[in-house]
Amino acid sequence: MGWEKAPGRGGTPERAGERRPVWSGGDLGAAVALALAQLPVAALLTFIDLSGRDDHGAGNGGALGAVFLLFLAPFLLPLLGVAQAYLLTLPSVVAARVTGRRLGGPSWPWYLAAPVAPAAFWSVLVASLGSWPFTTTLAVLAGLGVLPTLGVGWVRHRALRPWGVWWRAAAGSFGLAVLTLVGGVLASEAGLFPQYEPPRLTAAQLTGVWGDGSGAELRLRADGSAEAVGLPTEPAPFTDHFSGDYVVCAGPGTWTPRRTWRDGVLLKLDGDCGEDTQWSVGGSEDAPQLFVLFGDPDAGTLRILERA
Image (cartoon, rainbow, N blue to C red; front, side):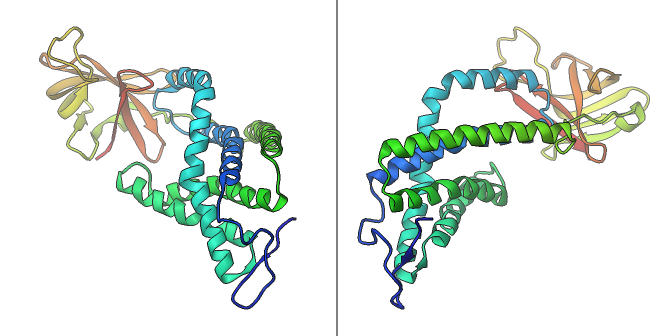
């Protein structure tokens, strides 16, 4: 396989190229090529995963956004490849080589395990910002780092020229993308990846108190009356003082169930604060939600209420 043993303290055999620097310009080129090679597959897997989740009404906007991203791909992909190479792959390669030189043994296990360290570092940072959970970020980043890190080590042992790395990466990317696409279609047809369907709630199931845990609250009563506290609502058009996606209102009102492909609630508050707002049903049968996507479907503000 081209992998040899690294020199360890016990006098294990030397690895080819052991005296070379822990990373070089050739490593950077290989890291970028391999990072770019796996991005189409990562995008397909993300699309397959999202197809089974609630898009919270952003389906059409998300499709337009995907088309827009296709036009930007020639500019975005190189930047993403370089970013991953510097932030994830090269730190993993350096850690694998330094550890292998000190401890010895077969080098491929070090390359396989090394992405966990930089992935953990960036996962702590992302989790501290409140974006993604630590465990989810760690799994995603470590998974993205394994193939390029192993590939850089393999390329150095094979002493491949840059063009040899790039055409192999392109061919491998195309093959993996085709396999992923075909496998995803077959799995979806077999029911392994069911499409998301919002729950269907009766009027009795919609009644009750809904809140977002941050002060917004909506009380729906069986007689059709409603009460809002700090609730986001659609803004009135052409208001000079307003510049956001929604306004916050409070007070009494009325509600009416709406039956379309996705159940919902049409809320009308008394007074002159905001406009009638359509809250759609999301979540699942066990954990239903009411949500509104205010503003642009691609860059608007999503507000979700759950049963209080």
